[in-house]
Length: 507
Image (cartoon, rainbow, N blue to C red; front, side, top):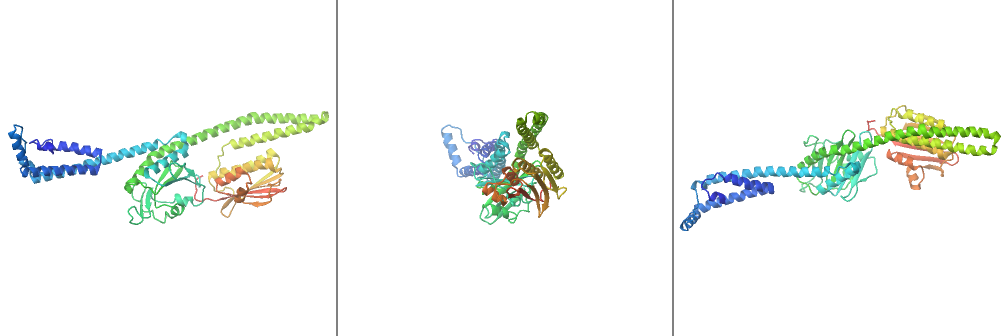
């Protein structure tokens, strides 16, 4: 304004104000820029008022008497019509520059957030550590009181749920429960959503969701979120879905977020954030899988070396001891019992090494291979131990997930190892059946039994500290039930029941 007062021509007028408004826009924001433009408009009109009241003329006379340059004024510049147009130009320019600067600042801040979260994706932290750091960063950003992450592998029916009460607590993985899928991974058109029971302005329930294309989704209702509300106490929740390749799907829930701007903008930002950090997290997952696969290959190589080296050597030594034992029966009867004992020790070590080799091998099982694998396992057990073993399956090809097939196979292997080591049994019977919507696996022997009489459920076994720990843990992984019926001196029956999960169709 002062610049315009001291010049008769006005070519630099708008250039001057563009500079002022641009500085205000990039220093502050939209509304501060509009305020700066409004102040400039007020000064322009005050200048016009001073001109029409003769103040400018009086100042010019004073300067002329003292021999100083007079003010260059042009009456046409102070016409109300021209001032009005200039005022409109200033306000419009302020809105334009302020909006552009606001968008630029928002993009810079979003870029900084993405870069900060991407910095949390570290291979050395592993998948769990990476997810924990991302969840904590989101909690700090939105001021959430609590956060949960739910995920499910495409080939597994189990839903993994992790919870963090604050940014100082580690991500705690909760015990799986049957309604987890309905509670956290319910079917919905919304890819990201915000819901508040009282509304942000106290105007009543508020639900806004966006689909994968960023458009408003209509399939979200209070009824859909009812299971989530029953499991968690909250007034509002912000959640976003994520996909890690084709292997994993999941959602992140932020409960009672305190730092929330325009809801729709925040939902769009969360979608973009997940799209940018998802591939980095997926790379961590793939590297973990690659390491596991490399470990499996190395274990298989080591197993082959054991079979071709140590096992064959032990078998050869056992055969030599057997020859010496037979020769000593007539020449040195006192050595016969000792050689028999050594031969038995060698045979036990061979069996232990073979069991170790079986445990080291990675099981590549699905529903088509499970029954033949169990039959072969039982047959090999009989051949190697001399214990009479039979296997019966009431289903030819059970339709169960690959992970469940692997766990059931490991349970049978571990059960047979326990029979050989502890039961002193002469016979063992393994069966696979399907009844009442459950898969049932049983291992029955005629050995010495457990040190208790009767039938104990999984809960009773845990509370009393009885039962095989490895088998109990594997049964828990597939959300099954373990029951042991023991008759000391007469034998044991071990039963595993696993619910048939129909929602998992991938093998």
